[in-house]
Image 1 (cartoon, rainbow, N blue to C red):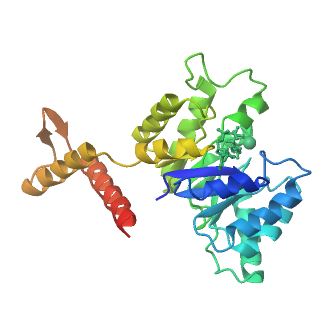
Image 2 (image 1 turned 135 degrees about the horizontal axis):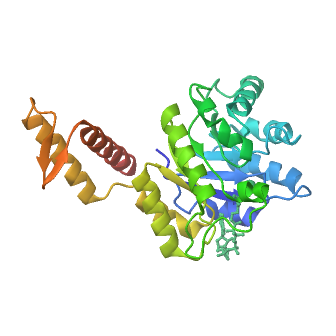
Image 3 (image 1 turned 90 degrees about the vertical axis):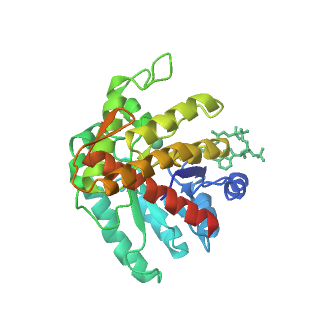
Length: 291
Ligand code: COA
Ligand code: MG
């Protein structure tokens, strides 16, 4: 379960060095938008060196139709990244194309077959919004679905994507919701997008809490200072776990009942499902921390 993915520009030795100690559940070494074309060859080398021998490090390649993706993959696949973040995906066809390429490269570079996951950024192009359902049953490599507002707003020619209070404007709320629905339909985690205002800790906390509340299981980070806040938001609180345990106990003690009352509120099957999920997540996180 990955709560936080920390982006690091692939051409920055300094930031790569810092990223390991930032406490994120995963790191994404970027070869796309945060790296210029001139720096890309060097970034590929740094990415390969950094990823080699490390767990939970992902690689963001360039879009499959950019002419750069293949060189990105050829340079870095020998280091066996945990997964590939796929930007500007048009539909699951792009993920499928990538999956086919990975089949070949895994075998060429002696990487265990099928182990390289794929995390598409599903909403960076306007057309992608009309085919998000394509991710359902697309490839067993699919590790989740995330979304992006920056490239989408650039594609629209929009002057802003958030209002004066920092909230998403309606086109981006729609993209965010569609990502959430598509991920649930494909039965993979939904990962919320970056909060670019990296000095605004309070704004980040409120975005991350809202994401967790809505059903996202993690979020992208761009700065080490964001990681703890994000991890915290996606970790069930003690109160949430206690309430979940009460719900499970109530159903256990009332085996014949479909609907029950808890603290003056009606609870039924969906609440039980969610309570079990909360307990399972809390247990997994605790086990990982102890292990
Ligand atoms: N990963 C690792 N370390 C990072 C980092 C990151 N994403 N962002 C900043 N740092 C390090 C800096 O190197 C600095 O350490 P130092 O002083 O020891 O060199 C420290 O954290 C504090 O950084 P700060 O001065 O607050 O920020 P900055 O001005 O250096 O960098 C950004 C700001 C936005 C350029 C930077 O955070 C960044 O590159 N983020 C990722 C961008 C990216 O990958 N975008 C693509 C996805 S949208
Ligand atoms: Mg981008």
